[in-house]
Picture (cartoon, rainbow, N blue to C red):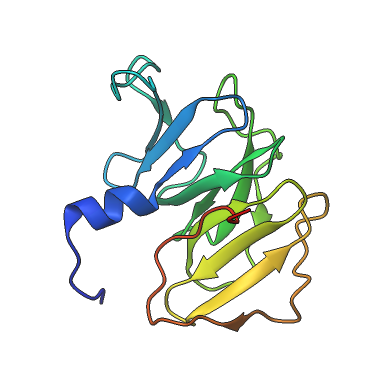
Length: 150
């Protein structure tokens, strides 16, 4: 189903820096979300917390919020950065059919679909697609998306 890729490539697509100076990582094999210590890169979340979904495939956010997407549930969850628990009452439906990556800027959130090969722009307050159905990805099978170079 998936193109071949190295374990390191997958790890890099599932990692995000928070606006609070913390680093987050989600692991779709263990269904957990981890907070990493920036100096040691070791887990500082006491073994991680269970993902609110069943297959975490992206973590990222804006300057004030942390989000996580799940490709099995086809949902996007807003996470409390202090507890890493779902603060969105069960998540919202993703505009994509296979969410695989989420990230943003101070005012916008971006999300990709690795089957439809699309990138979506989302309003972080409403989580609605503001890109009219997404735009074509410049590559096939996008696995991750990050912030904007300033």
